[in-house]
Length: 376
Ligand code: GLY
Image (tube, rainbow, N blue to C red; front, top):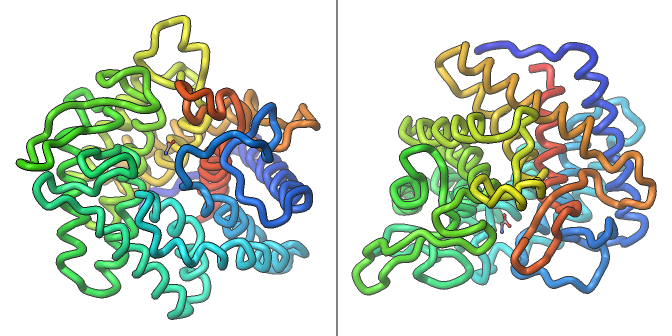
């Protein structure tokens, strides 16, 4: 296994960012106890803006689990983060039966899975298995994919971040059918949403009668044949994670193709525009949440590669993205801002969470910081 070392200036930069993240999450809990936000409006978490879909509730407890894991055993706040994480994770349990969303991986892998890995309590495993079984009910036999919340004929690139909960349930129950569903979903996504140059489409549309793939489209990207940057990072991270679950080398190859597209198309600091193919005047709008997901994805992928040179290149890329996020996009200098990272984008066409803090950006930023700081 390759060893990766941080220079001390980066260590200090990332430790300070993680302290700021803890401060912001603590103050969110104090200002709005029990509230699970999606995105800020003018830097404030609580507002009347619509959700579009309910997929983010795992990210707040997920950050608490990461803070708990990161702090040394004798730290005075370790117990606080454990108790807070449990308090914010338990209310998610009924979502294990939620058939309205395709996001059960986002919700449960960030929360219950972290809790289970820590305590190994069987009742937590049961929740995770049920969530995996529920997500598998979205499987469309003819097209061989898990359908998005939009409609049965719709496949989203985002689902690559969720299919892991089905791999997990398959592994725990030894249910071959569940594993088959998860693998088929990955292969179909790879075939119809990942292009030859490693760029990705957001959505694929199928003929439900025949299972025929019809076209690439988008909801949150610039257009059907563009490359929505967050979608690309969901693929980069999601195919890498699916390789970890399945050990199918084709999925690692796909993660690398997406990672290489990211490296060759993002600006030099690694923080991309909201869509890589948006017209030049729209490229000023970055999406820091895509950068945070990419950083976490690179810091995980670097440990999976057989080639140490490429592994080191991915590690350095993840570190470079984190440096840019810490130096240019932290909300630290704006005391009125409630989030951690500025400059995220949720849904540009609907005007939701544009140039704001977004919960998944916060979570993957915190995850990437912890991956970089971890000493093993
Ligand atoms: N619904 C997932 C996303 O906005 O990226």
